[in-house]
Length: 353
Image (cartoon, rainbow, N blue to C red):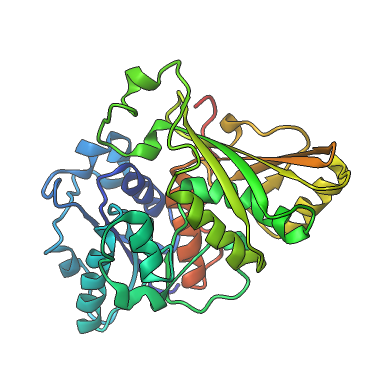
């Protein structure tokens, strides 16, 4: 057997970090090396993620200054970053510099927004902060695996949860030429998408039995989605996006509507999507409407479509922490290392979540 690839998670104490640790523990080709968290440095992983006790025992988080000690010189490294937007790029830059000195071969998948744009100015305009490592932008590429046929970069900027759900629903439609450039998107997300720290709008008593929109037509993920649609299809799109906070912990339900200018049947639309995802192991095009409980805690996406009256509707559901973050990152890491795309991602999800 080939030696296993070392796996390290930066920003490992957040929700996405915990999901990455869970996936690494069951991955056939990855070997856990370090869970990096300055705020939890020295604490057992299981004190933050009790569900990981059987996988990690008394293994502790380490700080940013000590994690590289666990990696042998000249070895291979799968480096995942679950650090926040605006902080991740600088951490990755230092990690790449340090691993280069030890002759370590490394691929990075970043779950923050820091490498979702190829242009420094575009990132700084949307996020209102200086980019932490603009010199690395050319080494990263962004997109969902299902839409990328040619890949030139060593590292990946993962599109994120809302973008993943919307892109999977939208790219085949725009690529088919059935609609014009305007797509209208309603997305409902679970509270884990807002991170571990309670905020007034994400605290459970506020979201329980509640549903409300936020940042309508002004959410910062809309330009990311539009840019990645153009990258995947070669066509420009205008994304009119209204996100909502849902009263559940995990999952995203995205509804995409568009005008077609002519009658398009549900059967025609279903053929478009079935052809687009014929070789996509994690995307299932179904008859009827998809439900969150069918995908939560898995790396799967389910898509349902409806046509008629010169308009179309496409619905997609994913787990925001898995397909929309940690699972999508693992899917990319498998590709970067030439592993089966499904490695470590095929375990059945629990029911009744």
